[in-house]
Length: 193
Image (tube, rainbow, N blue to C red):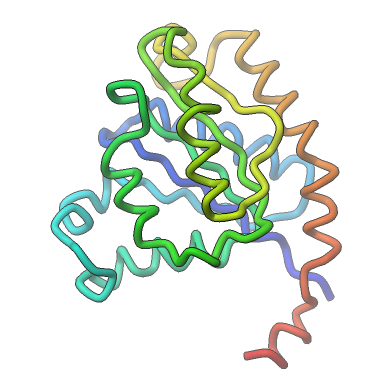
């Protein structure tokens, strides 16, 4: 019997509510409509104070360790970060500095970002894609970038953005389906444990 895919999103937003978290949740829901999965959202703003002071993974409290482990054991990853001074936030990078360098090999990753204006849209290709290339992850072909004007009350409202998010997921589905078929069965996972 095949288990549902573990679908994990990481939101680099520091506030709650957060536009990055809203975008990540929208993408999680779109993927979950197409393939069976267990969803989890990791909000860095909720662990910021415990994460920011650590230099080594061994210094992190157990709740942060659980969030890191969720990312490392995900079958599919969605990452969404606000743009800060032309790149992802420092805390976002700090979180991924603690991820084991081999944990994301061949893992499908859907890239997303939010920013104040369209001028930061290329951040996905110039900042996020190289970061996940280091991890040897399979960054999905289309990224999703949203501006402040694309939201009303922390919900996506812009039709073009909603269509782009749907297209990004549709284009990713063949790889996500392959991931689903290649995962070990529940019995195989139990035998490996």
